[in-house]
Image (cartoon, rainbow, N blue to C red; front, side, top):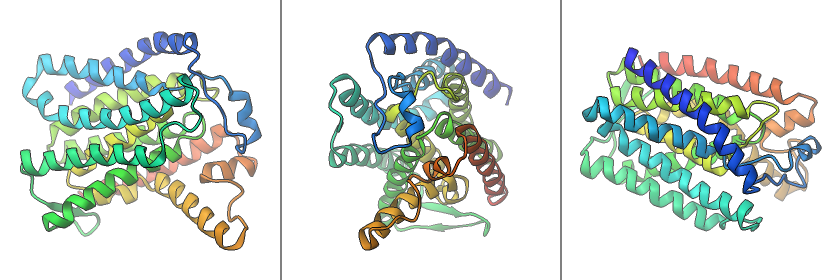
Length: 322
């Protein structure tokens, strides 16, 4: 436990310090956010804010993992595949961000290419678990406190679907200052607690490191944000959350603890489907956090309310599996 706290503090310190240099370099390279013209008018003032700040979290996690490896090689080796998979997702986001803000290609990589990249990372991670770690296909069902053993031909596609859905859900949640970072911080912390309760130290270790990185990044990401995480950060965090849940054999718990990102995704799906059918909108704007913005809620209020809801859901999620 104390070891995890030390790693969290080290990660926090590295993220805080590296943030100063990374933000400075991003400004120098003119890696700046371009706001959607059809987005909330209040966001136009954010035009020019540095993006791709997810690099800060990734730097912190990598350096802290190296430190952890020096002191506990056996445990660090177990968590490295999870870290690499999450960074793989972040790399897909980095390529997309790079094309948008550096190469000035506003479309970034095509949705098909982006999804294909995420699919490849998902397949590699699930195949690693099943064919190299030889984990069983048991999946825990929350609340019932029982588990089912899935056939391998169902298990692999299902886990891949979980990873793709989670990364895209977190990506959609990243729309206002500090929202995705705060929500992911709480979700990762809850998965870390479950890792402790179930004696899976590699999960509590990578979770502690990631929480420290999120806290350090949050210093620069809260309203008014000095840097945005970009797809680099949102896909990294979504990938990490899904990898941790799958490694714990608890992908279904994400329906509970990640309900806010789930609702963000559903709001987009509902809006698009309803508009195509009726040419009318259910929400003022999606993802749903924009609906609340246009309803008069300040960004800080949305972050507080959504984070509180996530905290409550995470407590419920933890009790559903113990």
